[in-house]
Image (spheres, rainbow, N blue to C red):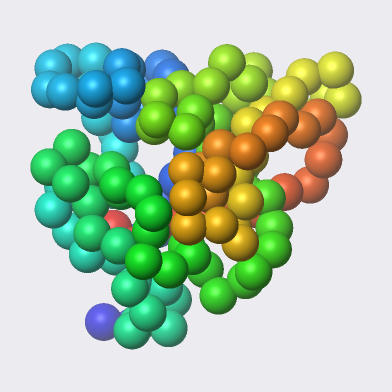
Amino acid sequence: RRSSDLTYEALLVDGISRQACSTASCGTGSSEHIDWVLQPNTTYVQSDGATVIGTTDSNGIFPFPLENNFTTFTSGSPWTGLETDWTNNINNCVLWASNLPADNGQVGDMGQTTSSSISLFSLACSQVQSLLCVQQP
């Protein structure tokens, strides 16, 4: 397919319209995997099309450590809104609608292959940060 025909979604949760897991056990049920961007039992690669990031489990989440970083960038802190166990962090820039310095959003670290890759610290929503985008089937 042409790259212009591809669809991507941000690996970003708000706990209402998108979430990976409602509990650390990340089971099944109506409160799990709401509009989640990762597919179960799927191998994901970096944008080079060859470097394997990892394979998701049956719940559509990566077990840590990842095989490689999410991206070829070795630094950066993308917005995620996640905790290290794939649940929602309370810091989500007011459902990603705020850019005020008084509000916070949770970020990960693109240079990590551990759970820090999805959740490391909170930043003021006035900060400009990247997003991790996932190609959709």
